[in-house]
Length: 69
Image 1: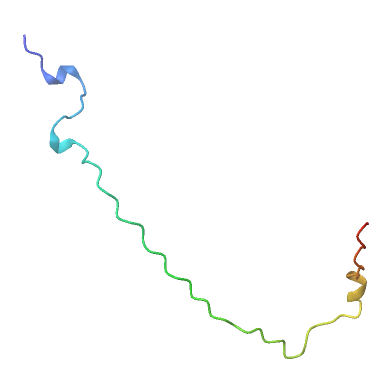
Image 2: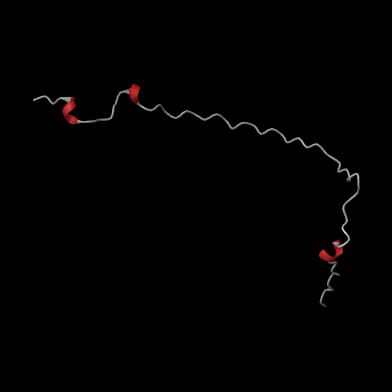
């Protein structure tokens, strides 16, 4: 008695054309471009810095503590 393939159900193809190819070597990672830093001088504002009259009320100057001997 010869069994027909349709009676067996699903099966995995075993031909070499159906196989997943062997893993290839990955190419190297791309080289990182060197960072270019352009030195920029800070230019003070044309009208000067804003100094509100009550600024000293918000930020108190605390004298430094003396070290314990």
